[in-house]
Length: 113
Length: 115
Image (cartoon, rainbow over all chains, first blue to last red; front, side, top):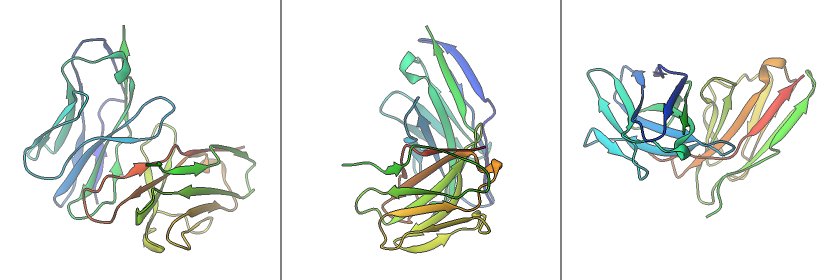
């Protein structure tokens, strides 16, 4: 069975500063990895995913995540955050070939001006 | 395209009462999921349908929870009788199919408070 650990429940950061949201997973089989985002009063939506190929994946709004198999990590980074990035971010994993998602507990990113 | 629809958005009931939630997935999506999200935790899969068949209900508390997707489109999730620990947001999601990596699209959720 898979599990996901998000090491920080809340991350406060000033606008235009860099940020890293940490995610570690555990699995006995190969996995797919995802980051979902939930903006205030909205539903969960996919931010980015790693299925295969390049270990560095990017989103359209400047976030990136790198799959590190040896460290079983999939940390999310952004070099310069905006107020509008304030949201809760969930890391999720599924078995390769399947699509049952196992989510972490989430990290609340609070961007301050 | 229209997103995943859920109703009601909010529900308050007393313990031992029953409640039902409704979900309409994105048109053409064969796979439908119900998740439970307790405050401070990530979503936990309760049940997964492929068309109108159950693929995975291993984490559904079957003594009180039931779900159906009779015509392979809309779905309902029922709790009877409710307990205090059932207070949570119930999320419905859909995807094109079972193959790995398909994006799951989530509805806005139903926030259930059991008093």
